[in-house]
Length: 236
Image (cartoon, rainbow, N blue to C red):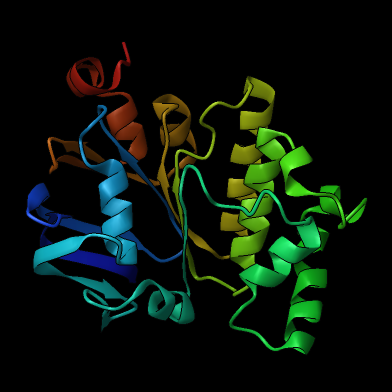
């Protein structure tokens, strides 16, 4: 069963079209990689799903419900989360304050209970919740952004370049955490600069080129496709 389906989607920024006739299906419980060259519309696709762009035509369905024109906060209530590449934490606040901000849909009691649950998955932050986020490393900030997204118990998490500007060691930790989240039952949509690694950990993949889907199918198939990999992904 699909958790997300996109039908004949055309979208962009005000009067500037970016996505053209996009059709996409994400099975529940899967990791879906969105790959393609720079400027192909990958980030725009995630923003459109979350309600941050202009949809000219087409539909977006989440668990069978048409969410095409819902506001982002309405989509969060339905179980969707979006982690942008930047601006996904509040650097001048403490770790605790960030977690509280993320649980804005919950009561104070629910925030305390949910924070305890989430922090068990991220023991790195149990050392000092009063630490200011601006003192954290890039990898720690990404982990915090994930923890914050979990506060509202998402069914679907969308990641936009989660390992950008991270060292190989920190990038590995982020990928491992994404796999762990998926094993817990959360569906993942992943836009990632490390195409090879994204295809290795995902189940299905979509190749976007100039705002259009040029390939859809098994991630391993795309990873091993010599022509598509060479032309669009830098995989030889």
